[in-house]
Image (cartoon, rainbow, N blue to C red):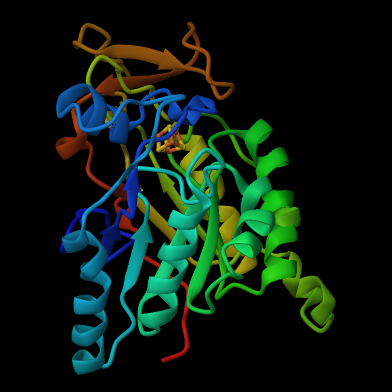
Length: 302
Ligand code: SF4
């Protein structure tokens, strides 16, 4: 859809089709639904037909491929920002066609991010196999989804040998502890463990989408993932803080009379005793974490 994406972790976004069905709490504020269904009425969300995009969109990867050949680089392409690439309600032929385009544009690195990692192996095989220039990823918004989705992602990694495997913790809705899925320096000389590792972690806070108002992310949840990545040597990319920022005490006093104020406990409850948070808007909240921009990417062979 976009020539150059506003998403910090990709150069382009490419949407072979639009439409999806919500399947997890991370979907509550689906921006694709807010834009393409509620605002532009181009597709109906849920158990309704998906809409395949037109020839212009399907030609975009070939233009990007030619540019990448000239530039000698390997730009990242987030595939299906307005859908889920491993959605089992889409015509399988569309995914086979999309994978075909990927194979014909080998300089591009396709980021196949899904909330349905249990479908990756089956649907990739039905589409002729995972393209060799594809990376696979899954969204994990809290510990419960991490426990379900990360093992499925890493099983698919072991089966399909993607360029790399990544997790997107956006919107981050609770604490996540996943060191057992990251490299452990003590095991570095045991190659069999390598297939069971996450290669890249992205984090982000939620933003308002239509009637859906962004839920705050406790600063300790971002910090914890940052620190888990640092300990394991995993690239960490903090995309955005969302709409909320943690408040700091002023002369020992918390400015609790501010608009958009809440207290958020480390368990994610809004309750007394929680950390003071203020809704400041996405732009002001920015993407610095403790004054640092975390912009790491996984390495891909030139
Ligand atoms: S999987 Fe993605 S595109 Fe589908 S409903 Fe959820 S957030 Fe929206």
